[in-house]
Length: 242
Image 1 (cartoon, rainbow, N blue to C red):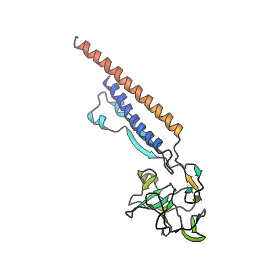
Image 2: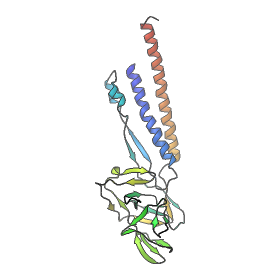
Image 3: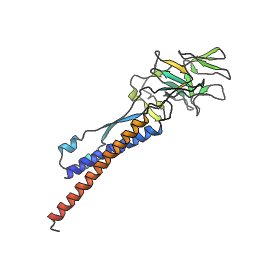
Image 4: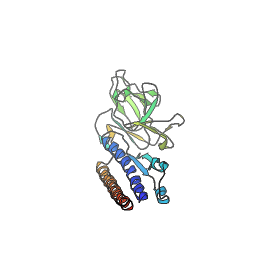
């Protein structure tokens, strides 16, 4: 019976994490370039092998891993000449205020006070030769990433990626940090779409369904624990002669 309580409790743990991940996905459903997260749940082999769990078993996480689904979202036409979307693989490369770099699929850019293409908040868009200066001119972007300001070429967007996307560190929203030991690779088979933004790849309806299912499974395990606890209490009462 104690084994049953442990099994039910262990079944509740990944459901809590599932709720957290799903809530995070839903909160970012309207964030351009956001990529949804998923979890891998651990099989309860310890619960099947042991009649009485140890403290270590209780402390073992029941979620093996959280992974990011990098599938491409749909493109929303905005008509804004500073909205860019990457059709294909790769990420935009941005330079933060401290000089470090991040990558993102979000392409809602602006022109800052210095005439440089930047992300809202200050991060600069890095092109083939560094930050891209367009001044006050009319910005046009070709499918190859070539950027012109009032008809003059001023730079080129070159999407980058890494060999293993699982090595990227998510640092919030649609931004990813590339670890120091990982090299970025130029992507040449992607095209740039001007006047479009890539939407989040979160399906709100599917996420809501998963959240409901996860909650029902959590609730079922909680009721199972209550029932087993009541039975165990009755057993102790009989053994104790109450």
